[in-house]
Length: 108
Image (cartoon, rainbow, N blue to C red; front, side):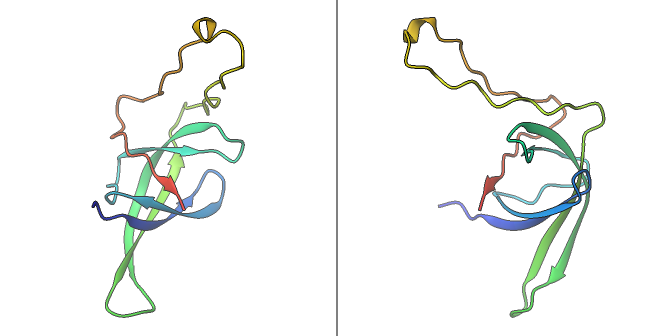
């Protein structure tokens, strides 16, 4: 079983905070794909990573500061399949961006 790390992500673009689960702590300069408030996916750059001591025990909690990648536009969510003929449905693909590491957080 792989350990999951819960990280608070502070989004400079939307001035919001959200707790997400990661398999590893991203580094400064790495990219993430995060879901926008409207449900679309967009690329974000990690601007800062820091750790603060938790209120319980001798545990250090990671925090991320992110900002939308310059020039990126949020991608619409993939189309849903209709009840029509499955052979006439468009193929769905996963959008990726070359400089990013492909880390995909899971919402808590």
